[in-house]
Structures are given as C-alpha cells and as structure tokens.
Image 1: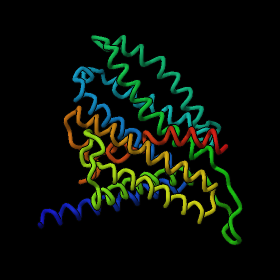
Image 2: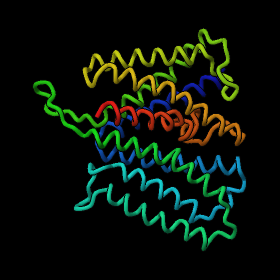
Image 3: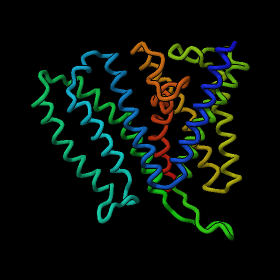
Image 4: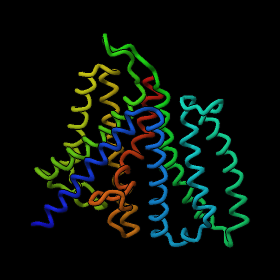
Length: 295
C-alpha cells in the first residue's frame, strides 16, 4: 500500500509541475510559447526516432547528420509558421525558418550521399513521416498562436487582451478534459472494449469523455464570450475525436516497439509523445477548421 501511495504522490507532483510549466509557456507571452514548443518539438523527435529504431532496426543505421539534421529541418517548419509575429532586429523568425529550411532541403540529401554507407529509402521515408507527424503539427500550433495576435479592448480597467493564446489553450484544455473524463466515465461504467490497441479504453468512457469535453468547453466559451459558441463546439469535438485517434496511433507505435512508454519525461506519466500524442493529431484538423471557418 505504501508503494501505491508513493506512486500516487509521484504522479500527482509531476502532473502539477507539468501543468504549471505548460500554463507558463502558453500564457507568459509569444517567446515563452515558442520556447515551450521548441523544447516539446525536439523531445518528441528524440522519442520518435527511438521508437522507430525499435520498430525497424534498419533506422538505427542513419548517420548523425541525418539524425540531427532532420530535427533541425523540422524546427525550420515550426519557425516558418511563426509568420511575422517574432522578430530579431531586422529579421523575422519566419524568414530564418524559410531560408534555413531551404538550406536543409539541399544539405540533407547531399549529406546522405556523402556520409551514408548504404542509402536506405525507407529511412528517408520514416524521417519524412516524422516531419508530418511532429514538426508540421507544432508548426501549425505556432500559426494558431501567432496568426491570432489581435489585441481587443477589454473591460474598463483591463486594458488590452491578447487573443493569441485563446485557441491553443482551448484546444489543449479540450484534450485534457476529454482524457480525464474518458478515464473517469470508463472507470465508473465502462464495459465495452473500444480497441485492441488500447485494451483499457471503453466505448462508454470514450463517448462520455467526448460529450463532457464538448459541454464543458462550450459552456466555458459561452461564459467568457470569446468567439462563437458553435466554434467551441466544433473545436472541442474535433479535439475529442482526433485526440482519441492520436492516442491510439501512439499506442500502436509503442506496441510495435514493445515498450510501455515513449520516454521518461515525467515519472509515472511517460515521455513527450505520451503527453502530446493526442494533440499532435488534433492540431492539423483544428487548424483547418479555424482557417476555413473562423477567418
């Protein structure tokens, strides 16, 4: 029993630290947001390459130039989507990401030819999938943040309000609420297995979590009166459905790699991919909705 209490304390402490760090990065400002998701981007890439190496040992033969070069190329995608919201002197991070990305696009194939003893197209394809799975998603998250840097007049005495973090925070909170409610509902009334990939998930928990997620986020959006309620219904519904798909995808990868967790970022909670698997798949679909219907 003491071990269980110790485990609970560890999980609770790491969860609190995680939430504090996330909220700080999300709400402090533009640069804290970029730093937060830069760290998450590289952390996800490290774990992705480790998982792929366990699934396909041939991927372990990639050169250090390939291994680290593709991570930098992915970061260029993140920088590219900062738009013109981030500037260092006369240079914008958007431009730096664009030109550095072009350099990487030329240098990576040349480096593969020069340093790889045996060029394996499958390895190139697996790294390209990582760019889509990880880097593009975090790039689109930066776009959601930087493209919405609009200051609205707040209530009397409150000055201006930066709308930038609103949609990213709404998306992340939707994922958290969906996961939490799915676990609670599944624990209470869950009986029907949802998927062989993740045996602990149940249909009752999955549906209950999604419904409660939409209800809570929609009521919160209505109360705050930021954006239309129907937009929050759509964003939370997309987050619930695609977030569940993202969780199942990462569970499948871990099962193929024969590991329990993708990493050891948080004791008792797993690694970067364990924490952000749902978000990685939900972001592109929310971005599409926002781009098509909210702009």
